[in-house]
Length: 95
Image (cartoon, rainbow, N blue to C red):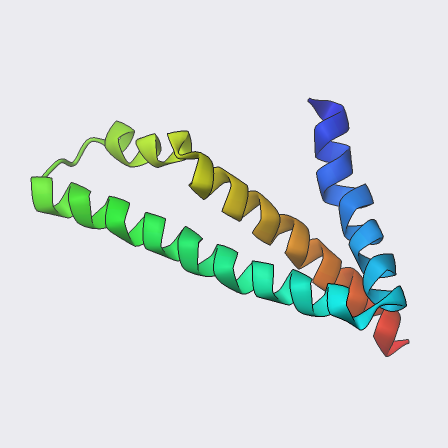
């Protein structure tokens, strides 16, 4: 598990940074995947909150069921990795 965290938070964004340096198409792909991920992530979140409000459930465990959705987890994971990649990109390209 620790190896996965290191890969997703350090190694993968660095690989993404170097890939986009070699080919512009990678930058476009990374940005498009981030846009699609943000749309899916936001839609899943809003639908889950809407269902809780509609059903008048106030238990906190109901909202936590969103974490069982693999699309929510994968898109959120990509957005976190993408954010670190963009921070690396901004830091190293501005200098």
